[in-house]
Amino acid sequence: MNTYVWLIRREFWENKAIWVLPALLGIALILAALFGRVDVDVVSTEQHRANAETVLIGFGAVFYAVMSLYSTWYLLDCLYADRKDRSVLFWKSLPISDTATVLSKVLVGLIVIPLVCFLAVDFASVLVAFIVSLRTRWSMGSALWQPDMWLELQVLWLYVIASAALWYLPLTGWLLVVSAWAKRAVMLWSILPPLAAILAERLFLGTHTVWDVVQNRLFGYSLAFHVVTRGSLEGADSSDGPDLVVAPIRTLDLLNPHGLLSSSATWIGALVGALLVFGAIQLRMRRTEP
Image (tube, rainbow, N blue to C red; front, side, top):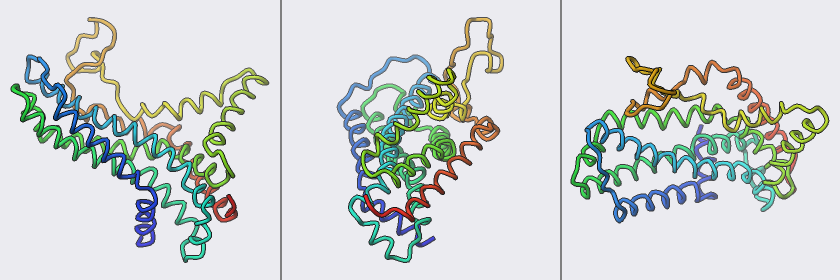
Protein backbone atom coordinates (compact mmCIF):
# COMPACT_ATOMS: atom_id res chain seq x y z
CA MET A 1 0.00 0.00 0.00
CA ASN A 2 2.82 2.40 0.84
CA THR A 3 4.28 1.75 -2.63
CA TYR A 4 1.07 2.87 -4.28
CA VAL A 5 0.93 6.00 -2.13
CA TRP A 6 4.39 7.01 -3.32
CA LEU A 7 3.58 6.14 -6.92
CA ILE A 8 0.49 8.35 -6.75
CA ARG A 9 2.57 11.14 -5.20
CA ARG A 10 4.96 10.75 -8.10
CA GLU A 11 2.10 11.39 -10.53
CA PHE A 12 1.24 14.60 -8.69
CA TRP A 13 4.87 15.72 -8.87
CA GLU A 14 5.20 14.95 -12.58
CA ASN A 15 1.71 16.03 -13.66
CA LYS A 16 0.90 19.29 -11.93
CA ALA A 17 -2.14 19.75 -14.17
CA ILE A 18 -3.91 17.19 -11.95
CA TRP A 19 -4.49 19.96 -9.41
CA VAL A 20 -3.71 23.12 -11.43
CA LEU A 21 -6.59 22.63 -13.91
CA PRO A 22 -9.29 22.19 -11.22
CA ALA A 23 -7.83 25.13 -9.29
CA LEU A 24 -7.97 27.42 -12.33
CA LEU A 25 -11.49 26.29 -13.15
CA GLY A 26 -12.60 26.89 -9.57
CA ILE A 27 -11.09 30.39 -9.63
CA ALA A 28 -12.94 31.13 -12.88
CA LEU A 29 -16.27 30.09 -11.33
CA ILE A 30 -15.62 32.17 -8.23
CA LEU A 31 -14.80 35.23 -10.36
CA ALA A 32 -17.99 34.64 -12.34
CA ALA A 33 -19.97 34.59 -9.09
CA LEU A 34 -18.25 37.78 -7.92
CA PHE A 35 -18.72 39.83 -11.06
CA GLY A 36 -21.38 38.06 -13.11
CA ARG A 37 -25.11 38.61 -13.05
CA VAL A 38 -26.85 36.38 -10.51
CA ASP A 39 -30.38 37.86 -10.27
CA VAL A 40 -32.99 35.44 -11.64
CA ASP A 41 -36.73 35.94 -11.28
CA VAL A 42 -38.47 32.83 -9.99
CA VAL A 43 -41.68 32.43 -8.07
CA SER A 44 -41.70 29.43 -5.76
CA THR A 45 -39.44 28.08 -3.06
CA GLU A 46 -39.34 24.73 -4.85
CA GLN A 47 -38.22 26.47 -8.02
CA HIS A 48 -35.51 28.28 -6.04
CA ARG A 49 -34.22 24.94 -4.78
CA ALA A 50 -34.43 23.34 -8.22
CA ASN A 51 -32.47 26.23 -9.74
CA ALA A 52 -29.85 26.10 -6.98
CA GLU A 53 -29.42 22.35 -7.40
CA THR A 54 -29.20 22.71 -11.18
CA VAL A 55 -26.49 25.34 -10.83
CA LEU A 56 -24.41 23.17 -8.50
CA ILE A 57 -24.81 20.10 -10.71
CA GLY A 58 -23.86 22.29 -13.66
CA PHE A 59 -20.63 23.23 -11.89
CA GLY A 60 -19.87 19.55 -11.46
CA ALA A 61 -20.64 18.89 -15.13
CA VAL A 62 -18.14 21.54 -16.20
CA PHE A 63 -15.45 20.03 -13.97
CA TYR A 64 -16.34 16.55 -15.22
CA ALA A 65 -15.93 17.58 -18.87
CA VAL A 66 -12.52 19.13 -18.22
CA MET A 67 -11.50 16.16 -16.08
CA SER A 68 -12.52 13.69 -18.80
CA LEU A 69 -10.38 15.43 -21.42
CA TYR A 70 -7.37 15.63 -19.14
CA SER A 71 -7.74 12.04 -17.89
CA THR A 72 -7.80 10.85 -21.50
CA TRP A 73 -4.60 12.72 -22.30
CA TYR A 74 -2.95 11.58 -19.07
CA LEU A 75 -3.65 7.89 -19.74
CA LEU A 76 -2.50 8.22 -23.34
CA ASP A 77 0.74 9.96 -22.41
CA CYS A 78 1.81 8.46 -19.06
CA LEU A 79 3.65 5.32 -20.22
CA TYR A 80 4.85 6.89 -23.47
CA ALA A 81 6.38 9.86 -21.63
CA ASP A 82 8.40 7.51 -19.39
CA ARG A 83 9.99 5.93 -22.47
CA LYS A 84 10.41 9.22 -24.28
CA ASP A 85 12.45 10.87 -21.52
CA ARG A 86 14.10 7.54 -20.58
CA SER A 87 12.94 7.85 -16.96
CA VAL A 88 11.57 4.32 -17.38
CA LEU A 89 15.13 3.05 -16.92
CA PHE A 90 15.37 4.78 -13.54
CA TRP A 91 12.03 3.42 -12.35
CA LYS A 92 12.89 -0.08 -13.51
CA SER A 93 16.06 0.08 -11.41
CA LEU A 94 13.93 0.52 -8.28
CA PRO A 95 12.22 -2.35 -6.46
CA ILE A 96 8.89 -1.38 -7.99
CA SER A 97 7.16 -3.80 -10.34
CA ASP A 98 5.77 -2.80 -13.70
CA THR A 99 2.43 -4.12 -12.50
CA ALA A 100 2.38 -1.66 -9.60
CA THR A 101 3.44 1.18 -11.89
CA VAL A 102 0.71 0.54 -14.46
CA LEU A 103 -1.99 -0.08 -11.84
CA SER A 104 -1.07 3.17 -10.09
CA LYS A 105 -1.62 5.01 -13.37
CA VAL A 106 -4.98 3.28 -13.80
CA LEU A 107 -5.89 4.39 -10.28
CA VAL A 108 -4.81 7.97 -10.95
CA GLY A 109 -6.64 8.19 -14.29
CA LEU A 110 -9.90 6.64 -13.09
CA ILE A 111 -10.12 7.61 -9.42
CA VAL A 112 -7.57 10.20 -8.27
CA ILE A 113 -8.05 12.80 -11.03
CA PRO A 114 -11.88 12.67 -10.77
CA LEU A 115 -11.65 12.82 -6.97
CA VAL A 116 -9.40 15.90 -7.09
CA CYS A 117 -11.81 17.55 -9.54
CA PHE A 118 -14.86 16.86 -7.41
CA LEU A 119 -13.12 18.08 -4.26
CA ALA A 120 -12.31 21.25 -6.19
CA VAL A 121 -15.90 21.65 -7.37
CA ASP A 122 -17.14 21.18 -3.80
CA PHE A 123 -14.78 23.84 -2.48
CA ALA A 124 -15.59 26.22 -5.33
CA SER A 125 -19.34 25.58 -4.92
CA VAL A 126 -19.22 26.51 -1.23
CA LEU A 127 -17.47 29.78 -2.03
CA VAL A 128 -19.83 30.49 -4.93
CA ALA A 129 -22.85 29.77 -2.69
CA PHE A 130 -21.49 32.17 -0.08
CA ILE A 131 -20.90 34.90 -2.66
CA VAL A 132 -24.32 34.45 -4.25
CA SER A 133 -25.96 34.51 -0.81
CA LEU A 134 -24.39 37.90 -0.16
CA ARG A 135 -25.19 39.35 -3.57
CA THR A 136 -28.79 38.21 -4.08
CA ARG A 137 -31.85 39.77 -2.49
CA TRP A 138 -34.12 36.81 -2.99
CA SER A 139 -34.32 33.33 -1.57
CA MET A 140 -31.79 31.76 -3.96
CA GLY A 141 -29.16 32.47 -1.32
CA SER A 142 -30.97 30.40 1.29
CA ALA A 143 -31.83 27.74 -1.29
CA LEU A 144 -28.11 27.13 -1.80
CA TRP A 145 -27.69 26.14 1.87
CA GLN A 146 -29.81 23.00 2.11
CA PRO A 147 -27.91 20.24 4.01
CA ASP A 148 -29.84 17.43 2.33
CA MET A 149 -29.10 18.88 -1.11
CA TRP A 150 -25.36 19.05 -0.38
CA LEU A 151 -25.39 15.49 0.97
CA GLU A 152 -27.14 14.28 -2.19
CA LEU A 153 -24.52 16.03 -4.30
CA GLN A 154 -21.70 14.24 -2.46
CA VAL A 155 -23.41 10.90 -3.10
CA LEU A 156 -23.81 11.89 -6.76
CA TRP A 157 -20.10 12.79 -7.12
CA LEU A 158 -18.95 9.53 -5.53
CA TYR A 159 -21.39 7.52 -7.64
CA VAL A 160 -20.16 9.19 -10.83
CA ILE A 161 -16.52 8.43 -9.93
CA ALA A 162 -17.19 4.76 -9.17
CA SER A 163 -19.60 4.07 -12.03
CA ALA A 164 -17.54 5.91 -14.66
CA ALA A 165 -14.40 4.04 -13.56
CA LEU A 166 -16.20 0.73 -14.14
CA TRP A 167 -17.83 1.71 -17.43
CA TYR A 168 -14.75 3.31 -18.99
CA LEU A 169 -12.24 0.66 -17.89
CA PRO A 170 -11.90 -0.76 -21.45
CA LEU A 171 -11.15 2.71 -22.84
CA THR A 172 -8.60 3.17 -20.07
CA GLY A 173 -6.95 -0.15 -20.95
CA TRP A 174 -6.84 0.73 -24.65
CA LEU A 175 -5.23 4.13 -23.99
CA LEU A 176 -2.61 2.49 -21.77
CA VAL A 177 -1.83 -0.16 -24.40
CA VAL A 178 -1.28 2.56 -26.99
CA SER A 179 0.80 4.59 -24.51
CA ALA A 180 2.99 1.56 -23.75
CA TRP A 181 3.37 0.50 -27.40
CA ALA A 182 3.47 3.54 -29.69
CA LYS A 183 6.83 5.04 -30.60
CA ARG A 184 5.30 8.39 -31.55
CA ALA A 185 1.97 10.07 -32.36
CA VAL A 186 0.09 8.35 -29.53
CA MET A 187 -3.08 10.32 -30.20
CA LEU A 188 -3.12 9.19 -33.82
CA TRP A 189 -2.47 5.54 -32.92
CA SER A 190 -5.31 5.60 -30.39
CA ILE A 191 -7.75 6.55 -33.16
CA LEU A 192 -6.44 4.79 -36.28
CA PRO A 193 -6.95 1.08 -35.34
CA PRO A 194 -10.62 1.47 -34.28
CA LEU A 195 -11.28 3.71 -37.29
CA ALA A 196 -9.63 1.21 -39.65
CA ALA A 197 -11.68 -1.64 -38.15
CA ILE A 198 -14.90 0.36 -38.56
CA LEU A 199 -14.15 1.25 -42.19
CA ALA A 200 -12.95 -2.26 -43.09
CA GLU A 201 -16.08 -3.89 -41.63
CA ARG A 202 -18.32 -1.43 -43.44
CA LEU A 203 -16.47 -1.83 -46.74
CA PHE A 204 -16.07 -5.62 -46.83
CA LEU A 205 -19.01 -6.86 -44.75
CA GLY A 206 -21.49 -4.02 -45.03
CA THR A 207 -22.17 -4.13 -41.27
CA HIS A 208 -21.44 -1.72 -38.45
CA THR A 209 -20.93 -3.89 -35.38
CA VAL A 210 -17.57 -2.36 -34.43
CA TRP A 211 -19.01 1.13 -34.69
CA ASP A 212 -21.97 0.13 -32.51
CA VAL A 213 -19.61 -1.26 -29.85
CA VAL A 214 -17.40 1.84 -29.90
CA GLN A 215 -20.37 4.21 -29.89
CA ASN A 216 -22.04 2.35 -27.03
CA ARG A 217 -18.87 2.43 -24.94
CA LEU A 218 -18.34 6.14 -25.56
CA PHE A 219 -21.91 7.27 -25.03
CA GLY A 220 -23.67 4.39 -23.28
CA TYR A 221 -22.71 5.58 -19.80
CA SER A 222 -26.16 7.16 -19.58
CA LEU A 223 -27.51 3.75 -18.46
CA ALA A 224 -26.02 4.58 -15.05
CA PHE A 225 -28.79 7.17 -14.66
CA HIS A 226 -32.56 7.24 -14.75
CA VAL A 227 -34.44 9.44 -17.18
CA VAL A 228 -37.21 10.89 -15.02
CA THR A 229 -40.35 11.49 -17.05
CA ARG A 230 -43.92 12.56 -16.44
CA GLY A 231 -45.14 9.00 -16.63
CA SER A 232 -42.55 7.78 -14.15
CA LEU A 233 -43.58 10.21 -11.41
CA GLU A 234 -46.23 9.04 -8.97
CA GLY A 235 -49.54 10.66 -9.67
CA ALA A 236 -48.39 12.32 -12.89
CA ASP A 237 -50.69 12.43 -15.89
CA SER A 238 -48.75 11.02 -18.82
CA SER A 239 -51.59 11.96 -21.22
CA ASP A 240 -50.56 15.61 -21.10
CA GLY A 241 -47.97 15.07 -23.79
CA PRO A 242 -44.74 13.25 -24.56
CA ASP A 243 -42.38 12.17 -21.82
CA LEU A 244 -40.59 15.21 -20.49
CA VAL A 245 -38.13 15.75 -17.69
CA VAL A 246 -39.92 17.18 -14.70
CA ALA A 247 -38.37 19.54 -12.14
CA PRO A 248 -37.87 19.71 -9.30
CA ILE A 249 -36.72 16.14 -8.64
CA ARG A 250 -34.36 14.67 -6.09
CA THR A 251 -30.79 14.20 -7.27
CA LEU A 252 -30.73 10.64 -5.95
CA ASP A 253 -33.70 9.79 -8.19
CA LEU A 254 -31.34 10.11 -11.16
CA LEU A 255 -29.02 7.31 -10.01
CA ASN A 256 -29.51 3.90 -11.59
CA PRO A 257 -26.88 1.54 -10.12
CA HIS A 258 -29.07 -1.49 -10.80
CA GLY A 259 -29.23 -0.66 -14.49
CA LEU A 260 -25.45 -0.30 -14.64
CA LEU A 261 -24.58 -3.41 -12.64
CA SER A 262 -27.20 -5.64 -14.27
CA SER A 263 -26.04 -4.81 -17.79
CA SER A 264 -23.91 -7.44 -19.51
CA ALA A 265 -22.15 -4.63 -21.41
CA THR A 266 -20.76 -3.34 -18.10
CA TRP A 267 -19.12 -6.63 -17.13
CA ILE A 268 -17.97 -7.59 -20.61
CA GLY A 269 -16.35 -4.17 -20.85
CA ALA A 270 -14.74 -4.63 -17.44
CA LEU A 271 -13.28 -7.97 -18.54
CA VAL A 272 -11.96 -6.48 -21.77
CA GLY A 273 -10.54 -3.56 -19.81
CA ALA A 274 -8.75 -5.88 -17.38
CA LEU A 275 -7.22 -7.80 -20.31
CA LEU A 276 -6.07 -4.57 -21.95
CA VAL A 277 -4.50 -3.37 -18.69
CA PHE A 278 -2.72 -6.73 -18.45
CA GLY A 279 -1.50 -6.19 -22.01
CA ALA A 280 -0.20 -2.74 -21.07
CA ILE A 281 1.71 -4.28 -18.16
CA GLN A 282 3.32 -6.84 -20.48
CA LEU A 283 4.32 -4.12 -22.94
CA ARG A 284 5.73 -2.05 -20.09
CA MET A 285 7.89 -5.00 -19.07
CA ARG A 286 9.31 -5.41 -22.57
CA ARG A 287 9.61 -1.91 -23.98
CA THR A 288 11.99 0.78 -22.76
CA GLU A 289 12.80 2.53 -26.04
CA PRO A 290 10.70 5.50 -27.21
